[in-house]
Length: 133
Image: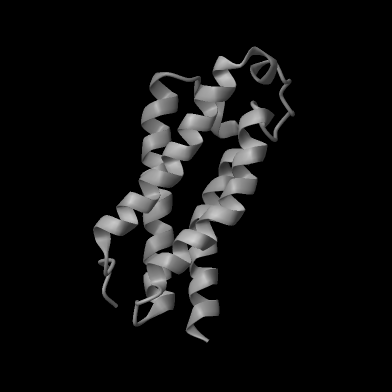
């Protein structure tokens, strides 16, 4: 199995796009007092105004980007698996840098971040399997 994506720069670009959308939406929420004052949902999310819309966007965006990326791939399942790992790695790394330096340390104690990471990892291979058939 080849572990290098067939279009590495495009995969990185899509990963950065996903993370940037989350970062921009988070910035909008933090700068809007009515949104930033929405209370925490214990053990689920610290900032529901950020995470709930982002999870919905992820459910639409990740399959769309995966389909675009995989349209000319030969082995769609293998490429999709690599794409999911790359989505997860880049987003987790950028989250780690951002939230451990600027935000607070308990960011990773909420289920919403782990759900978003699962979507980044699971949705591309699911799309790849559906496209391969």
